[in-house]
Every structure is written in structure tokens, then in C-alpha cells.
Length: 175
Image (cartoon, rainbow, N blue to C red; front, side, top):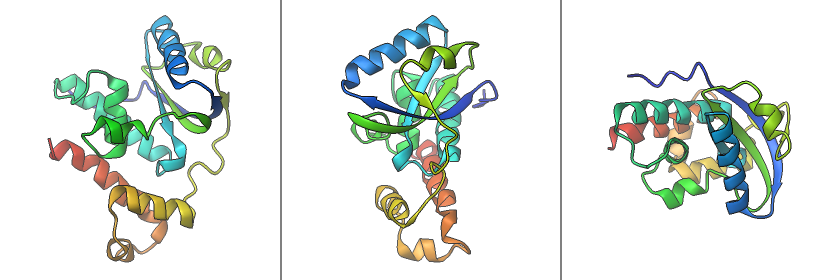
């Protein structure tokens, strides 16, 4: 089985979260109501929408193969996003208290899901969430162990996304 995510949709969003467990409970209720999975990625530490897409694709494939590390597709996607087998590391790639900039994934896509979620998050056009400025680049380098030498091998430093996606893919090999 492959990690086919053609029936997935990913949207940029923002929200304020005062109580993470309550917010997660609400997401689970909505997901159950629509027979789908909802994964919220912290856009501030992701290398853009492609990063979220790759993490979800690998997680779906892993779950379909019966080779998942975690018990849920949602956590599996966060593990892939983090490029780590450690749930405590992966958790930082999800939601947190306070203001959140998110990539919200719905898999499989379910009609009406975005309207149901709009009470909890504000969908945006994603402007800026795919941008990797110097501060974000430095953060990605630290999180994913990317060296200055590796970055120097790229013809364009903005292609750091490719190095991050490589780290995400390596999680599957490291099993």
C-alpha cells in the first residue's frame, strides 16, 4: 500500500489556544463526526506546506503497512514531521498554548469539515507560512541537525526545504 493522500486537503490557519487538551478534544469530536483525521502542524517550525504534505504521506503509508510507531495517524504524522521516533519531540510540531500558525490537514477529505472547523480556527491564504527567513532557516537547521556545510552545498539556501524533507524521509529508513 502506498501513502496516497490525493483525498487530503491542507489549509493554512491561525488560532488562539487557551487549553490544549480541550482543543484536541474538540478536534477529535469534529474528526469523528466527519469520519476523517485532522492533523494540525505548527507552521512556525515546519518548512512549509510541502513539509506537512510529506509528513502526512509517509504517515499514511506507514499506517497502511501496519508499520506505524504510534497508535494514531495524527501522532504518526507529527513524528514524521519531526523526523523523530520520540513522541515528546513530535509534540512540538503540533499545537501549543497561545497563538498558533497552522497547517491543518484533513485526511480523507470530508465535505463540510472546513465549515465545522471555522468556529475553532481562522483559515488564511497561508501568506508567509511557506517563507523561510533567516530566523526560520536557523531554527530548521537546529531542529533537523543541518550543518552550515550542508547548506553551503545548495545552489540556493532557500532549498533548505529539500534537506528537511530528506530528514523526514529518513525516519522511514531508521525504523
